[in-house]
Length: 248
Image (cartoon, one colour):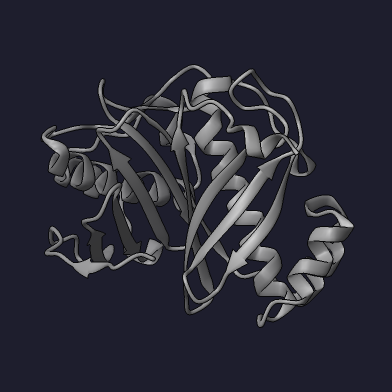
């Protein structure tokens, strides 16, 4: 469960509309932004320069970039790294400071970021709720027959449940990528439990990625639903061995 508390945001002439933090472990930040209020000079005003390739990107992409970098700086400075500017590796994955594990996501006017000094795998994702049509059309790609049955048993519209599953698997992929550097198919992990009251979920790997992250390993997830959005978080020990009871 996330407990976001509003914190003061730098004046950006309506671009950053609000900023909130969950001061738990990991530290989670969330900001909303209005792309209609974006203009290029904000990059200079916030001291967050655009990389050369992005100067030719569409306005929406530049706005997303600036908002997510603003959020990254706000969150990472609270872990003792003031003035941090997020860059990207050759594979476009984010480059976080040494000693900090973090994950970033953005979608249609909202950006979220989770960060910690703990040596863990960490993935966060935010999604706008699918339409019923999209959920039905993509069900076979996103989920197994057992997962579909499990989702239909939840006290949620199927579109919301499908979005939750999609987001949890995205968070899982993002958590494991820095360790494995392997692509992940939606069917290589399955959703096995959803606790709507506790806002928690459990996933199980169905594929052997490594000795540590092998078929049968269980991973814990958390989620937060608000308005038409879902935020999910998956975290785990990077070197944790699979318990014997998970082998069955």
